[in-house]
Image (cartoon, rainbow, N blue to C red; front, side, top):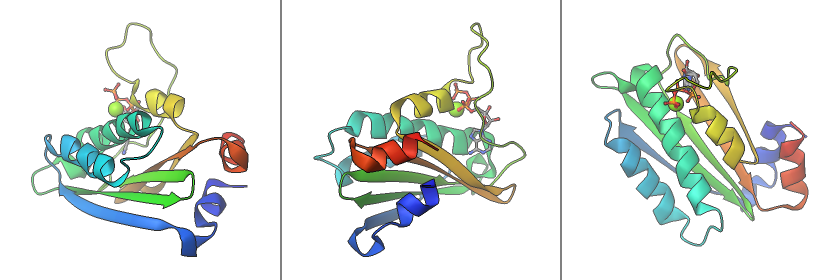
Length: 149
Ligand SMILES: Nc1ncnc2c1ncn2[C@@H]1O[C@H](COP(=O)(O)OP(=O)(O)OP(=O)(O)O)[C@@H](O)[C@H]1O
Ligand SMILES: [Mg+2]
C-alpha cells in the first residue's frame, strides 16, 4: 500500500487542521505549538514535534518560504492511531534527500532524524512548491504498511 493510499483511507473519519505561517525563523516554534495544541493526547508527541521542527526548518532554510514575504503551511491529519504532518513550502532548487552522512558534517541530518522518528516519510512537488509528509502510527497494519514503502 502506498503512502498516498494509506493517507486517503477512510477520509470521512479523518480530522484535518491546516495553518499557514509567515516564513520567519521564530515560526518554527509556532508550528510546533500548533501541533502540540492539536495532539495533546498523542503518545508519540515528542517525535511529531521533532519531525515538524526539522521539516519546517528545511522549508525556511532551503526554499523560497524563508525569503522575505515567504510562507509555509502545516497540515495535520489524524485518522484513529494514524497521524500525518505535512509541511508545504514555496519551492526551491534542491529536493528533500538523505545523502550518505559525512560523520564530520555539521548539517545534513534533519531528514535522517525525520526518517528515524517516523513510521514513514515522503514528498511531492517541484521547484514551485513541495510538500514533505511524515507519518506516525502506533503499530498495527498501518504501521507495517508505511514501513514497507
Ligand atoms: N523542503 C525542502 N525543499 C528542498 N530541498 C530540501 C527540503 N528539505 C530538505 N532539502 C534538501 O535535502 C537536504 C537534506 O536535508 P536535511 O534536513 O537532512 O539536512 P540540512 O537541512 O542540510 O541540515 P540539518 O537539518 O542537519 O541542519 C538539504 O540540504 C536540502 O538540500
Ligand atoms: Mg534540515
